[in-house]
Amino acid sequence: MTALASERSRAYANFAAAFAFPDPQALEAIRSGSLADFFRQSLSAIHGPPAKGIDWGVLGGQRVDLDSLQEEFTRLFEAGPGGPPCPLHESHYRGAELANLEELVRYYDYFGLSLPDDRQVRPDHLATQLEFLHFLAFHEAQSGEDPQVAAALSRAQRDFINRHTGAWIPMLGHALAGRTVCPFFPELTRLLEHFLKAEMARLGEQVDPT
Image 1: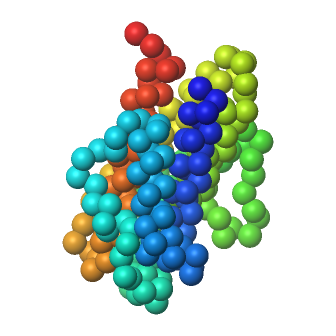
Image 2: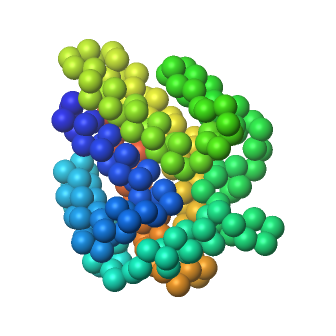
């Protein structure tokens, strides 16, 4: 179980990095195919073969240039008249922003995590949520042979995905449909959605076996 949790932790960390503002290193990972190769191998190791219908050619090997990728990221997720069309913030899709943010902060506080005071990092940002899941899976991997600790961390991951990340990523995917000339970000979102669904199924069986 610890090896599986470690692989899951790496997958969450790499999803978080893939949804960050693209830099030259990220571009090289896309163009070389190493990003797609990582996800294909990692997700196969975790859940078996990834869901059919993922276009791995879109996720890797593209001859996209950095300026275009950065412009698309900014246009979709960060800027636009009246705000970006597809922000990477849960509260945009689910409403009840204050209550949502307060619940997220309670999750982070419970596990001893705090966000910077400069307000540049929002509790409901996708990267923040993925990094939190990375943190939980990492500590699950470090729990060794303590079944109670591992079970508590698995339950926390299941509940967090169910209540937060897994609940709004399909909405982000829907918002992205037809809004971009660069298919990378919609396809990455589809892959994340498939991964979270598989995680929910696996964690559900692990936490509440029938």
